[in-house]
Image (cartoon, rainbow, N blue to C red):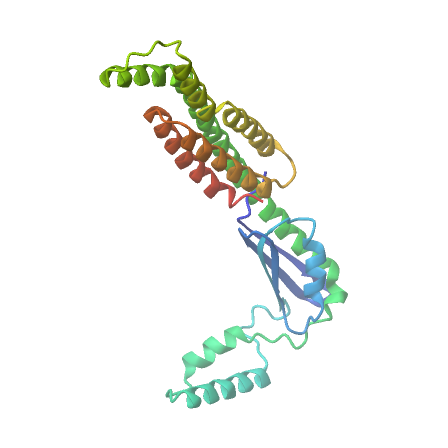
Length: 293
């Protein structure tokens, strides 16, 4: 089981072309798979290749991939940038400031900050020429984020096992309280009849009919059976190697439905309290499930 949240980083050098590649991958929870790739604008088509590399690693989630490339040649000689890009960026900033009536003054701080963001990429080779290096950095980042997702998934799995066990305990408590429901109702019914000075025998056909109707209406054996089945399935999903987040989310809905039905069919206050406790515990499980792939 894996979490949908993670971070991974990888790097590689294309020595022949004197280029260093850095790849960062981040992921957060999302019901569907949504990937965004940010890479040098000169590398058109690399985003589609990244999608292909990514498809077997994630089933769902919002994935952000950032690929950076910089020349290793003269790396210690200071900043390197394209003068043309710098001039174009300054012109755009001036135009924007003028359209908003914002004073715009170019000083050394503005130039330095802009230069840091405009490192010269005009000499970057075609990405296909260094595809192996990009793939190596990408695979390292994938392995890094996968390890993080697995570790968090293991933590979530342990937490979910404990919480499902708590729900199972609550279900058994409900079953115990339900055993005496009809007897308690019968005694209460006979006491009310006595208070009304209506002397009826416990074997009177009308009393038996009322007890039968109540027993049928308050029978929660089917709900408890389905709850136990859902708990067992949930445990199997926790131990599964495949992505089961959607299945867990569906089971949470079904467990909630069974708790609701159990509460509506039961009159003892003990069962009502147990149902409320179970639904509160289930809500905490649902919050955790939202982060499971």
